[in-house]
Image: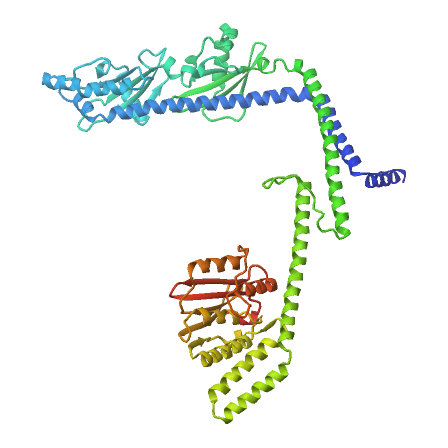
Length: 613
């Protein structure tokens, strides 16, 4: 019970503590625990880590040696391929070279000189020789020899069994200091003779060059012949070889005994006298050779104990510095949080301009607190924008209602007067006048009655048809309106008077007074948007005026563009639509001078029962 009470008490104290106190406690525990672990475990861990690092370094060096040796072997093989491409040279040394002295002279001046150029162009190659079983061969040393000069005579059979080419770490000729590459030269019609052999000789000093030089690491690099444990290539001036002295043969022999052509995960370990040695190796199949890195255990582990006190001192200094930095950082963090809280208190009082000064540049992101501050500023900006949008929307609605009220002054008297004139025109047999009065009355009723911001598409279309009929009668024009729309669409609600200004623009600007113009109204659904297209085949819009209209519709223009005579221009309709449905809705105009003008109204598509038409 006492333990449970104590734990409960500690939890309450921690919960009620300030954030700065919690951070200080957390960082103190994070610092104290590593210090204790480093103090008690460092000695045991250091030797293990040194061993792992040394093995990783050795493996990396062995892999590098393996890659370098294979790269140089590729150079030799490429040189042999280049030499064998000299077909005229190869054919000539297999022919009767003694039959014609002039041919031999030309051969030396051309093909033979080309072969020498190939050899001299590769600084690594000391000699390239052909051994040919040809009794009529003219020897030109050291490039061309009789096959009898090659030893052992039956080596061609081993080359054949090994695929036609092979390396020897110690060549048959000058083997102590030379690596050779042997390759069969097979020719048709030579079945009864021994195949010719091409030999490329490379001095060890050139082939291995800097690969086995003294290095700053603790590893000693050796190349060991897999088939002969007494054949090695190493740098006799290396510090390891100098210290090992006569015992080097025992070390190399013990390591060679444990080598395997299959790669091993762990290094080879041997004991020679009172010393332990590790060996990392790779088997190079073409050379039939092991690349081995050797290091003594004592050399790898030298000196770590002398660093213990130094490392502990550095660790404590770093920990102290971390504590100072943490203290400074926490103070800055809480100071910035206080500015966020102060701004929130101002907003609570109704001051929406209480933005937080982050001090960030335009492309800077900052840390999490800066991100909170930036998001908070954006939220305030969005709140102000939405409030402004609501106010604008209400203002437009009030203006429209006020306009409607002004228009309705004595509207009853105006309707009765129009009806009396219509009846008088019918009595006097003037049907054109009567029809125009009916159309005018329909337009007046539609524009003056604002029961809602939206109407059915059929109501807007009926008003437009009345308008076209009235214009044709009054101005004697020939304006054709076509709108073959599905019945389902006619029920869809759209903003009132959003199509009328567009049709009016087409009537006034698409054709000369009294001229003919065709206006086509189509509807489609694309990407959850209802698209109402109003297109005429009139004169089109001037490109400069079109650019101004498009800029105004995008919101890029500073001055409004009014294109209809009743004051409800395209820009006004576009703004009304965007206030109702958002900025991804609105108007778009396209036109080609002398061809057409098309205005598209983008509205949201929300009636799921009309999909697919």
